[in-house]
Image (cartoon, rainbow, N blue to C red; front, side, top):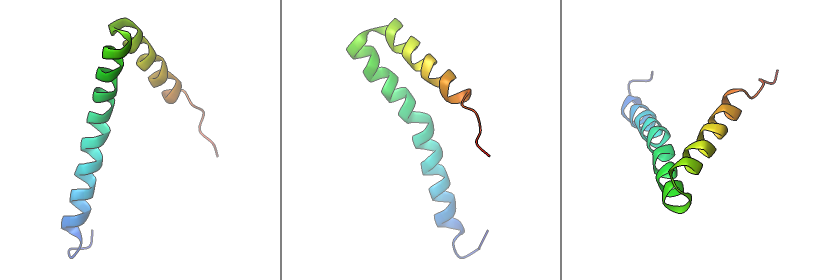
Length: 58
């Protein structure tokens, strides 16, 4: 890591981690308000499994 850019690189990393962990929680909360608990959790789980099982290209 370049010492001159270390601060900006680490802050970019933490912003990405923060958004990556909080955005799904906020999305599920919005879905719960719109559709109810069971449909929101079922839809989110289905999406998570579909993303996790996506075949790798290459």
